[in-house]
Length: 309
Image (tube, rainbow, N blue to C red):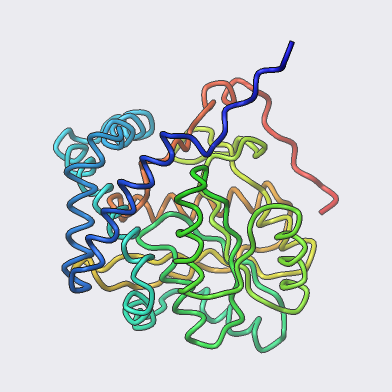
């Protein structure tokens, strides 16, 4: 009796989804830059978000962690958050035109001085960031400023989409390190050489620790803090926020996280991101399932901190 083969990710559904998204991207790329950014934002907000269930996810997340938010604000965010997602997507596919805007962004906050001090010392830096505004604006800006900036990325679950997505983010800058054995080896080599590594850490991490985020438990990867401790790297949170015009950016570099233990350091990252999100609610990707298993984790004992770090 033959074994049933597991479903392949090269499925018809993934193929059709990629065709639709790729078609929308190609259509948008035929437009002038600012028009395409606004067009893609509205397309995702008005058409794709309702069909894909993004509005419901935004609404559910807000109801879970911000139950007192007025209905009018929830309704606004259900439109504004997908709009930012759409703009971010087409910006990443716009290559040099996007980079030209990103490199004009000013950098604010105490983290810039820490970053420059680390470069002068030849000390590696872990830049922890999140899905705020456009996260790749940070990478483009720092590469332009002469920083040896690399990034760790997670392969998309849709292999058809992943292929051209990786090509697009590579046009913004390299090196890029894919999560996996080979990517980790290359990433470690980059860090040891005194390089800067950017990592997005505000997604649900199955093997992460249940840490506080918006007053609820959210499984969070400790990898950024662990790398910082292992390689004596500066851990600096940095975020690329969108200007009110929806086109330009400003970069917020928060203060360096002091070395202690991975749990304490990662919780500090969560706290800093939460404060920034509360000031810019429409710029964080509320479409993600950030609080999966939160109720289960809330009943579990608090994770122990490593006193040997």
